[in-house]
Image 1: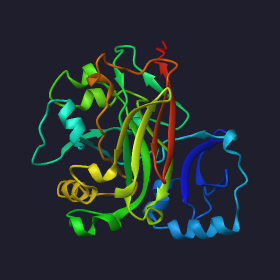
Image 2: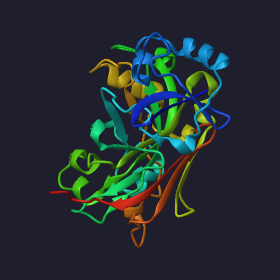
Image 3: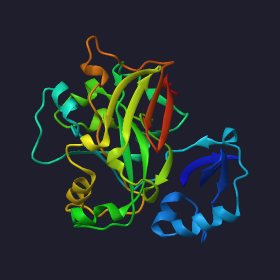
Image 4: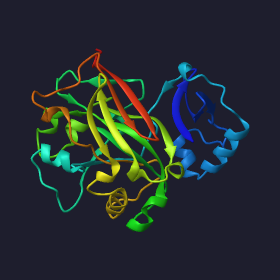
Length: 285
């Protein structure tokens, strides 16, 4: 089952998309008004039952997608988590995961524009798998980690490269507005038999830039969930962005960066295709 967040009739909503029609769940399941709240209230099964008796009636062409979780409490990102990416950046595999953070304001959505900021022309693609968490709490053991996952989605963790390299910390290059695309929908974890069998691919204007299997992650998802939980509690709707494969634009010869008019897609088998165009930031007075 595929859950989405969207706007319709100028109102933020959430629902389920099936057979190219959307069932609006806003306020229908114990009054929950967004997907994060549905997860927190542990009402996923009620939502599934509602959809069975209330088939969709909203045309996806009549909506604007929002990030799958528009209001996450935290977005935890992982760097250097595929061997080919470690090699191309001339780094070494560390003993612990490389963790950094995004803020919700940095996100955009499926079919919305990724924004190239006025201060840079080095906007790079990073296709990744996103994990949407339940109310897991702290000190989760690796063997218990997967049961705390609600669903999976696609993420383009677009990066402003020279700002990333201003210091050893990644934060500034990762938090420009409307650069982190999240969507198009969340597939329930129970519908993915083995995430390690999935393949991730990033395409720029139809050309394959990145391709890898999720089994190639250096720090596997249970390890990441457990590691982060030692410092902070996983809460409903929190997002874990698991790392990008090799093939990023700034390490190509010559470098390839996203520019206005480009189309970038991140596809994960059994999950979906996240598609965005690139537009320049417009400064308003």
